[in-house]
Image: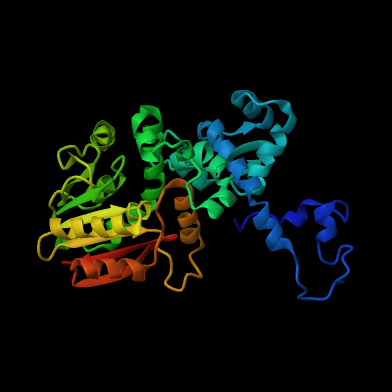
Length: 367
């Protein structure tokens, strides 16, 4: 995060291991301009400090509590039931990380924190961070094991199927689907603005979780009707989410399995953050199913953290692919060229890649 101070700046002087490593502070390299410094290495290597501080703040409800109004340190500590030791450092670390603001001894949310980390708001993306804290953070501790074995390092280490486990527990399923809303919201809004929806009347979002994409498309384009295709257990969660926006008359849930059942027909089929979960054969199968379900002139839209073709710039996409190693038995993220190749092999005649937002891009194919 660009607002983080460098790790070496955490020491006021030369003392301590990190202070001793800082160029020009007791190092043998001297103070020459442009000399090589370890700051970037240390900041990345200890980046989990800041990450876990934010994840714990979300878990504790810091941002939701401050959305009700600013609080001084003691009041915030008491409301969060924190021990006095560490509480002030915790709050001030969030200030230094750019996650909170402080004025006149009171803490309050940043505009981003107020919009995206207050669980009472529909714009809340903390579900993703809740899942990261509860599931991904511990599993990533075994990345080295995963790199050596090629095997996932989450629940499936105990011979369990990750998605079966998630979908069998109502509480964990709702957390997971909320997390998918969190990671998809910005992309869904960008998709609603950038794709030429005026040329189409209907859509199906495949594996759409809570219904984030459906809702954003329907809100932005009153002429559209559509729905979501997902496992039956997701239906009540989708219906609840859609009803909260008053869109039940335009958006319908279609139960089924995209492995076992044909996809519902529509003029546009969307797969967002879906293909990266699966191995190459399964990816090709899903692309072929989309082709079969579309009419002539229909469009297939895939979005993920598409890796740049040169595999140098989209660090998030490459790290997400490592997350697929941690989370799945065959999943991986992919380049735009990879996806366009699968689409052409399935029969699509025109394909293109367009940036969406942040690390996400979409690949559009026309039948």
